[in-house]
Amino acid sequence: MADGSKWAPYIEKMQEQLSQLALREIQQDQTAGKTVKAYAADKLAKIAIGDCAIGAEKHIGLCTIFPLENYWLPLFFSFWEEQEKKISFLVDIMPTVDSLVDEPYRIKYFDPIQPMWEKFAHLPGIAPFEDDAVRAVCSIVYTAAVVPVDKEGMRLAALAPHTEYLKSYIDFVKDAPQADGEAKAKEIQRKIKAVKTALRSYVQRQYAGAMHADMIKVFF
Amino acid sequence: MARVDYKDMITFADDLTGKYKLFEGIDLVPLETYEGMDTRSAWDFKTPMATGYYKPYLIKGSTAIEKITIGELHYMRRAKYCALNMTASDDYDLPIYACEFDESAPRLGITVDLMPIADIAAHPEYREKYLDPLAHDWRKYRTIPGFTEEGRCLLQRRYAPWPWARESLSPYSLDGRVEEPEDRMKVMDAVAAYARVWFELLKKAEPMKDPQYKQEVLIRKRVLQKFYRDRDPGGEVIKKIFGDDKHHLFVSLIF
Image (cartoon, rainbow over all chains, first blue to last red; front, side, top):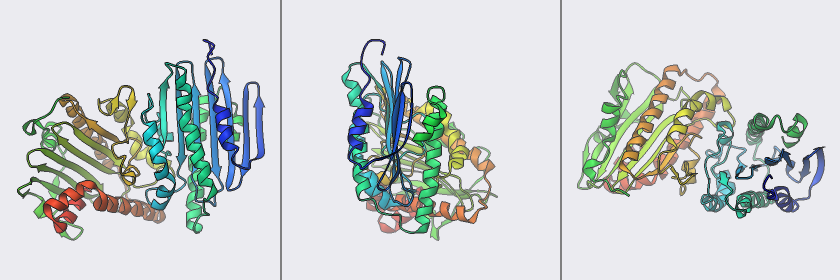
């Protein structure tokens, strides 16, 4: 950063949480200043984490976790765009079913997140995520903000929702059941595909210049 | 914070029909029977605690409408509970226009939305067709003080205690609590603007053709209606005032 401040330790803090999983590395893409790694784990098809810098002005972090399509388990998405004076972010545990109709799913996965969702509502800059297509795939407990960095402590404050949501998600993985029946499995499969398309498209639109196609592919 | 006397509260239904001319050019005909219930007892009610009406309509000559209900419940000349609901018939996948509008001296509570009756993450084309037309108005009205305060925009948080209700909302819901009288009037602009978008969608609506998609849509629609009719806390107030029988009629007309 121009003023000599340090970027928030996004990768380090997220990796700390991910280390609770038995990760098997499956993919890696590394070019100057840009690294993304992908893993697999029990019940999880892909866990990808990476970051890149856009000059000295922006630091981008992403973490995606897609479950195997035969599990009744949400997916995880964390997006981080840090600048000297503000941090834009979104973190969510996104539904892989229609969570209005499948109420037990909502009760199992989103109700426990609600206290965090309410706690983080007090963050300065909290707001609906700006992109309409991404907002449409979010759960009822997503947290998004454009946090003004008026003191250095704000960087860690903005990072807290990411690590706390991820910690909860990892707990959910441990006892996630298989999809109950073929119809539910099909619903999950269809929805994961649609959500993945929406998220990938967002990242492509935002960062096509900064992240090459292979790097984006690793996340999705 | 300015308090608003009952006599100065917004005349919700009169404003929509008069000031905003929302139904101009639309031939509304009263709906006397809804889901097997005679609706006429809801058209005008008066008890020691509450006066008002919930009046459902159809549009003359249209098969696309299940109901258009507009209503106001005035509680002891202290508060108003107003609603506008526009629901398409089962052959159409139009979102449900739902507006819940409660005004009391200290504040106005509002939720207005086009609630999707398809899973919009699985069906992005539904969002593009029916919900994205709200994007401009959503961005315009979400800055109303009360929706946004001190740089924090708190849309989709009014229903915080009721996660089942948040599940029903689109990405364009406008909801929150508004205090100042001039800001309360801006909320009415939003209520009318969202309704106009719904009427525009209605003009282009076509019956669903894919039976599997239709089944999926009707399942979601029924769940939505059941949740609001069974669980909306406003329904408890209605039950206390009017008893069980009328409660079912009233909540079925409101949602």
